[in-house]
Length: 126
Image (cartoon, rainbow, N blue to C red; front, side, top):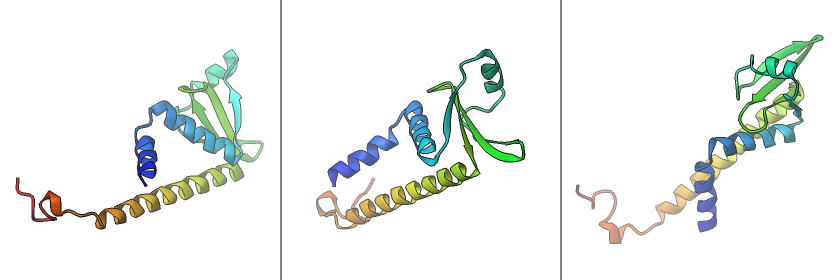
């Protein structure tokens, strides 16, 4: 269980770059495509989008979602409605799993012996 606690603690202490990279890994797994901003035209267009936010775009009657990353890869992630729906489902599933893990750890603390610490909740006087 200590290893589990360390994993949760490590996830909470991620740098902004690590958080973005994890999000991008989830986008790739959901079917988003990586498109580098490697030409002057792409870079100019890239700067018009809000960084690290999904934007809904319509092209030829089809809906796409773009996610610009100026921090890690200087690229766009582009996905269709299916990729976006899969990404959102994966995020929901991950959040649910994280919440269940935190609940399980909280339940473990209910069995902890507070006696040496003066008892709970009224043994501590400040």
